Length: 126
Image: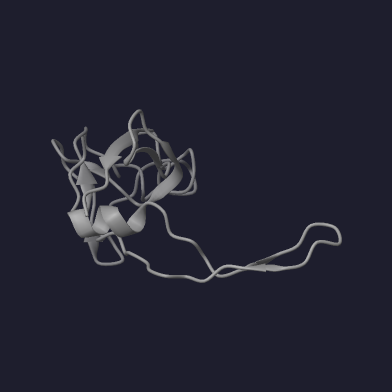
């Protein structure tokens, strides 16, 4: 189980957004944002080294650059899998538990073969 700070978990799993939604002739429904959380950029999950293919050349070979946006690559194991965010969240087996699918890869299939698709089991603790 990935361990994140309690406040982060409590506020990052279910966050309503501000939007207006209409369907057919139904009136708009307003939803108010009541909180938000930011996942720290250096949040990693256990796993093998990843990010080895981020610097692909046009011919498909791996380049020599090892730093992008102030981050050094690759991310070494045993905690080499970055948690960039969540693509999906569903209720877990018990009340207050959730299964979250971690965002997939680094943007393309070509530069993400060492990025694992994974789920995180989270519990809310207030």
